[in-house]
Every structure is written in structure tokens, then in C-alpha cells.
Image (tube, rainbow, N blue to C red):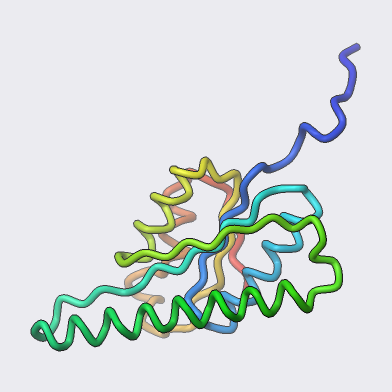
Length: 149
């Protein structure tokens, strides 16, 4: 009979996708709880949107807005971790980049060798037709994906 190895089972990296929506913030909180209990690294990622519409002025405005959201999310994360009574032992990192949300999350999950991905359910009506980031991640079948309402 093989001996049980205490502390070697379970995920090493849990990735949570953020976009500032209520469901993504709930997903981050859920992922934080999982990561803390499992002793895993929590990788929080915000993919700043890109736009192909308009000229350079529009692109610059979108880039500026994306960076402002990224900075605001980081401030909210730091504040939440500081207020969370059981945040001791929670290891987390924050990543942000510009691009397609699905591709950015998928690439980072591959790079970090994520064991699980947690995202919020889409709050946009149009995603019922074209598919949300969450649906695309599930369909990729590369990681266990938890979609938090």
C-alpha cells in the first residue's frame, strides 16, 4: 500500500479572469478562497480590450481607459485582500495585458501551467449568440473551468 503524501495533492495555480463586473469580482473571491484553502497561487488577470474601430485618437482613448480599469482593479484587489480576515497565507499575483480576453486568459493559463480557471458569467446579452469568454474556455477543454454567476 502506497503512503499518502500530505500536501502534494491539489492545484498549484488557480487563475481568475477579471473584467470589473460584479460576476468577475465574485469569481475572484471564489478563486481566492480556493487558492487559500489549497495553498495554491492565485493568478488574477485583466485583459484590456482592443478596438479596431476609429482612428488613432479612439485607440489611444481605449488604451488609456483600459489602463485605468487595470489600475483600479489592482487597487480593489489590494484593498479586499487587506480587509479579508483569512487572507494570511494567500499568495496572489496580478497580470494585465492588452488583447482578446479569451486568448489572453488561455495564453496566461498555459504560461503559468494553471490547474484551474475561474471566471464570472457573462452579463452581456449578445454573448448568448456568439459565445462568452467562459463558454470559449469551457469548449477549449484545456483546464477545469468554474463559471461563477
